[in-house]
Length: 163
Image 1 (spheres, rainbow, N blue to C red):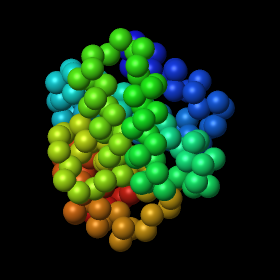
Image 2 (cartoon, helix red, strand yellow):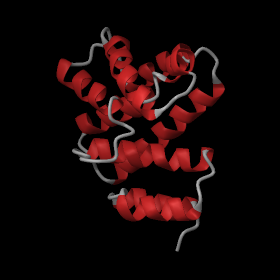
Image 3 (cartoon, rainbow, N blue to C red):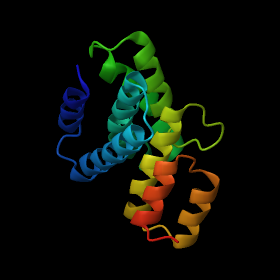
């Protein structure tokens, strides 16, 4: 299964929830853009893109089970769901393990290891800041303390008109 097929499968999985679909497609677009501009190798880029598409796979379950989509719940449930979602994808075990790790850590902002992890955090934040109407102070703080890629920082400054 290629990235586009995984995206189509995730859209079907989302069962018409336009917010969820629009969210992960925007995160995917930012992740793809940042990864390509940062010149990731093909394997890392593919892991990043698949992770971006399925990073919030647990949101429907979390809403039903916990009444919210708290990041801790998403990470715990998402790792399990990501493994099931990708089991027949034809992706290597190593590839799937890394995607599961990223899905299971996409709200953990400490000990970010790997450029794929860093970019997923940045792409998700770019979208969440808009959807959550984050303050300029919050955005600046995250830019200064969390964002690391040149492309991610440039996009954040451009999108939110930061000088």
